[in-house]
Amino acid sequence: MSGIYIHIPFCKKACHYCDFHFSTSLQSKEQLLSALVKELNIRSNEIGDTIETIYFGGGTPSLLSKNELHQLLSTIKSLFSVAHDAEITLEANPDDLSLQKLNDLKTVGINRLSIGIQSFRPQDLTLMNRAHSSSEAMQCVESAKKVGFNNISIDLIYGIPDLGIEAWEKNLKIATELDIQHISAYCLTIENKTVFSKWEKTKKITLPDDEETLNQFIRMKDYFQNCGFEHYEISNFGRSGFYSKHNSSYWFQKHYLGIGPSAHSFQGNTRSWNVSNNAKYIKAIEEGHGFSSMESLSAKDQFNEHLMTRIRTKWGASIEELIRIDSFLYEELRTNTIKWVNDGLLIDNGAHLILSQEGLFVADTIIADLFIV
Image (cartoon, rainbow, N blue to C red):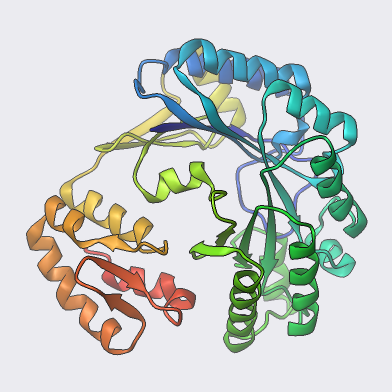
């Protein structure tokens, strides 16, 4: 199983929390699309496995037209062996998803939507500088179901300034009543060089404390599970049979090809990443070289990769696999796990290292401590 990720680095406007690679200027879109097609051709021999997942991320891939998406998908299918039932996901903003747009997406072969709703509260959407309204958020999901989409995911954010537990519960209620298959929910983090970072430094916004954010996380986890969602990764909840296949490939170290500026690729023993600048990327692709950097992964790198990604899931990190990669590193890791196990934050069942319910919220701290340097 392998996957392809296509990065579409364009947005209508900059959200106040986002530090992903994007541009609000669409002037270079045609050149960028040509470069994406050329990169697919250049790298068509890098993956021989059947492609099980294709993921359009960004940025805002829903800014692409029907013809542009068709061009990219037809290029992929002409160059790679794509499974007939491949999961083909497109990230989208609610304000882009008119009935016509949704029909176009369905026609070109998109079979899974990941909709960036973030919140149903108007004041949250304004604070985050989102382009859509609360009503658009709900309407686009209903419209997507109407045209035949039956694999829909939405994104939510918690830990937002002035988002109390009652307001958060209203978001959870609305989300579950939409009758969708998947929800990704992320805790707001303040990234450098974002508007939120500037506002926090100048005291224009105040983030909730850790206890309040923890309460929102716990309430979310319990609420979604009570509504039939399985908590299969720290930030992801899916109904049975509707886990994100593409994101799961990251957590299970499956090979994937990243196409576009700033996109990352993983080939088991190597990792590569493309230049994070649209103009430089386009120029390098036109010249046929210099658009990416690569590193070989040592046993320690692979060990840490498995630990970091797998422990975030409900299945945990495989002890057998860690020992296979490097038994000496595992002995070092085992010593480091003792305090977390004793504190009830990590479970060692002899086959896997799994975060406890309490450990989920401090996962980043635990993973950083277990990381072998």
